[in-house]
Every structure is written in structure tokens, then in C-alpha cells.
Length: 407
Ligand code: HEM
Image (cartoon, rainbow, N blue to C red; front, side, top):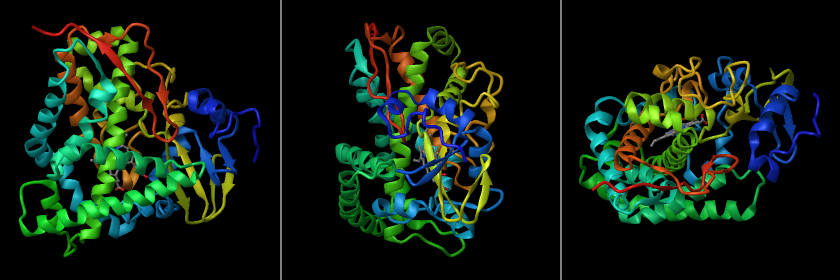
């Protein structure tokens, strides 16, 4: 297998600043890269990442989460496979689709979005990241679970620590220690709440998790705590980045922003294209159960494989003019973009396909519509250029906008 010394390292500042040229070089020259410091094989082409996620050969397991997440969450559905995964996923999935989502949680989503916008709608300026995107999804999850939103700062601190642990590619011991502390703090916070909720079930998601039963299987206090921790991280950081990115992309393309403003049915297209062009999660790992041929080389059994979603989603063999943000592109099916038949890879594919994809869609559509209504002439603050940050998860760190307050 070739190594390509001219390609900047995945842990370098140059890569963090702009990974897209590096992704292009990897796709072209080193479709299977061994990364010594990460102790991982890395794949970047669409066909390889898709194949790993779909895992038709039953080779690519999620056993990597035993070291990547279990120390902070405990065991969750991400790590499970086969029937155990199917049963556990069936316990939690109904809350994130269909009538539960539409009737129970859509009003929660709308209310939380409005509350945040009310705080700045008369001000004429806002930072869409600090004032909105970092708060909205985590408030929604806390509200869905029936937790106290006043604890927002703690939730936010916890999920940022969990995501940092997950993406600790360089093995920083401080990041690892902060993750371990979060596990203890979150358990101390959640277990008494779960026990109390079992005594007095309500109409919230936490009560549903306490009562859920599939094939005689119920969730223990520890299972529920681990799942809540996963929800905060998987549903907080990702949707936060998605909302910031959809606005960064649209504000940089004023003609497409104007089209969306005029025809709101295009919000769905804008979100699907944002997931392809600037996915919130740039890399996901798997572990091989057997030796396998991949990306033109051989990966031994028991190895970690890092799938570069951000690279695969810009593969010119899959998308025409892949580095162009275009909500009207014809090679991205919006109707399938939020299901396991999606043809972008931002939610992964296969049995671990994001359980919260439709919740994320409901949040982003509600948020974009309410923000556009509140700020009819929203534009980036003078001289501001939105820069993405992050390697594992990625999105703009700030998005200051100005607008004329409505009456
Ligand atoms: C735009 C927003 C989102 C993105 C980009 C995203 C991305 C992902 C990805 C890439 C995976 C696959 C992980 C893997 O296979 O290793 C995943 C799984 C998952 N996501 Fe999301 N996610 C988003 C929103 C949400 C939301 C809102 C929730 C719920 C509150 C959620 C909950 C989950 C859960 C529970 C899993 C594990 C599913 C399983 O293992 O069967 N996600 N997500």
C-alpha cells in the first residue's frame, strides 16, 4: 500500500483549517491510508465508506465504541449488533418518528425555538451559533426527556466533553480524564431522576423509556442513563452544527437563500445539501471482524477503520461538481435524504443509521423557518467570514448576523 508524504496529516493544523483539499488528495492517491498515530486505516471514497456502513459482508462491527464511547456513556445501542441491537433500537426508535414526533414533540420543538428567538428578535443582531444553534437542540432533548432546562449549561458542558472524548484522535490525556469525570457526574445527576420517574410516570420521553418493553426486554436504570447521555451527545452537537452550517451555506450563497426564503419547501433541499456538503460528523469508525479487501488494499482482522464522511460526500465519482453548494443539484434525492436509503452519508447507513434523523429534520426545518420569519433581511455582520472548525465534528464557531427588527 502506498503512503503519500505530500498529503497533510489528519492531525495537522493545515488539515483542521481546510480538510477538503486533503480529502481530494486521499481519494485520488491513497484511498486506503494507514495512520500510525491514530492506529487506524482510513477510507475516503464514497463507494468504500458506503460499503463499510452498509456492511453487507458482516465484517465491519461497531466494537470500536467499547473504547471510543463506553468509558463516558456506558454501553448503548451504537455498540450492539444483531438481534440485541434490533430489540434495543426498537425500544427507543418510536419516539423519534411518526405520531410521537409529530404530535408530542413538534410543539416542544416549536416552543423551544421561539423562546430562543424571542430573546434577540428585537435586537437587530445575533450570533446564530451562540444565541441559537448551541442551545436549541439540547433544550429540545432536555424538554423531551422532561429534564430541567435550567441545567442547560451542565448539559452543554457534558455533551461537548463526550464529543471531545469520541474525537480524541491524538489521545490527549486531559480530554480522556474530562470524559471519565463526565460519566460520574452524569450518573449522579441522572440515576436519581430515573428512579423518581419510575415511581411517577409522566408523558415525557424518559417515562416512555422507563416503561418501554420489546419481546420482554426492558431498559435498566443504567441502560436509560447511557441512552440519555448518547442522546445529548448524538442529538446535541450534531444538530447544533447542522443549523449553523445550513445558515453559513445559505448566507454565503445569497441567491439560494433568497430562493429558500421565497419557497419554504426548499428548506428540505437546503438541509439535504448541507448534510452532503458540510456534514456535522466528518468521521465515524468501525472495527473489522475478519481480514477484508478495502480501498485497493488489505485490512487485517481486528483493525480500526476510519470512514471519512466529509471526503466521501464530496467524491466526484458520485456527485457532479462536488465542491459546489447547490440546493438544486439533481444527484441528491431529497425524498430519501432522511431515511436509511439516503445517498449522502452524513447519517451513516445500514443498521446504525441515525435514529434521530427525522427529529433533526423537524428541528432544522422549524428553526430555519422561524429564523427566516423573524429576520426578513438577515445578513452576515460586516466583514465576517464564517470559518468551519473541528476535525471529528465540524461547523462554524460563530455566525454573527444583523437584521432590521420587525415592528
Ligand atoms: C443533523 C443531525 C445529526 C447527524 C448528522 C447525525 C449523525 C449520526 C451518525 C453519523 C450516526 C451513525 C453512527 C455510527 O454508525 O457509528 C448516528 C447515529 C445515531 N444518532 Fe444521529 N445524527 C444527528 C441527529 C441526531 C438526533 C437529533 C438524535 C436524537 C436525539 C440522534 C441520535 C442518534 C442515535 C441514538 C444513534 C445510534 C443509532 C444506532 O446505533 O442504531 N442523532 N447519527
